[in-house]
Image (cartoon, rainbow, N blue to C red; front, top):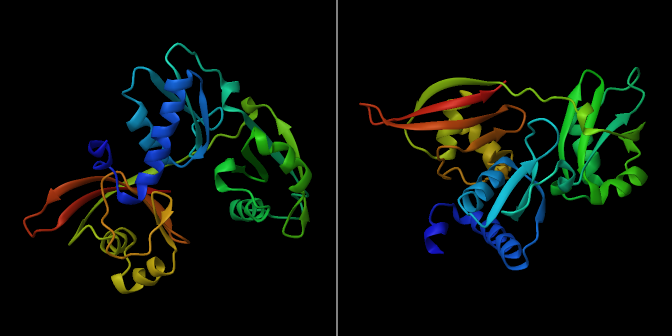
Amino acid sequence: MNSIYQHFRPEEHHFLDQVMEWKEVVTDQYRSKLTDFLDPREQEIIQAVVGQNHEVRVELSGGLYDTERKRALLYPEYYAPLQDDFELVLFELEYPSKFVTIQHRDVLGSLMSLGLKRSKFGDILTAADRIQVVVAKDVSDYLRMNFTEIGKSKISLKEIPLNLMLQKQVVLEEMTTTVSSLRLDAVASAIYKLSRQKIGPYISNGLVKVNFKKVEQPSFQCRTGDTISVRGIGRCKLIGVEGKTKKDKWRLVVGIQK
């Protein structure tokens, strides 16, 4: 067991324990286990832990197209999963789009204000004045009744088939940079071209996330594969740490989300 934990950060061990419990449910009871929506790092962890297992398989889905947040289905090797097994409901928001502008953060804030956990809904998709949200089936009726306004705007939800889901376009622009250390403040400073003095308050005020979790320690050590986001500035993925230069600096390859 210890050999598994050493591959993950201490703050990931609780989720790792959950994954191990889910695996046991499938193995012992020989039935499938469906999770709530997972962020990309949690998806990586569950695939790493379950992916090599022959008795238990895992499949991910957040809708028809590739999405950021997905539910995981752990299932016995004999079973062939169907899309319906993921229990996803796609809603399109109907609102007076000619008179009101609603943004992604407005939808997210309103959903959270209803007391829903973030794990109960997946991606919020936008295109022009169209807005869709993917939710877990077990909260869909609650949302129909209670998700009736965003700010001062009245809205209604229309359930639509998954094949009408808007496609999300994520483009990463690759860049290389060098840093004196792999501390979060040094890495974020180099990527976003801000001084460490300027990036420091973002971190201490909880505006910086690594792998979709708030990190408030400037000394936090970054690793290959980390997703770093700074609220109001941008998001990137640390594609590679390619050793040190002759000047003893770390060379990083970074994908900046455009």
